[in-house]
Length: 73
Image 1: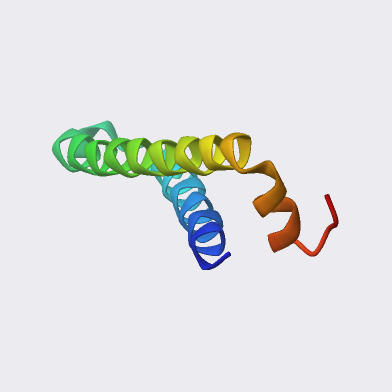
Image 2: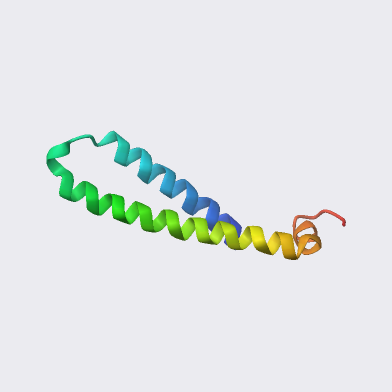
């Protein structure tokens, strides 16, 4: 459960990074924007991989997932 909560927080952080990136429109600072964009890309990749891992776990162990959330199988 802690991993899912951390993933949710990380997704929210990435969403904020993208929003912040879109707000900064000064093309004169393109070097900083590229570095920033590379950092966002890496975080998106990481979050995507972790989301896929959790999805796979839920497909492989559906009864465990239901029990963990307090539901009966």
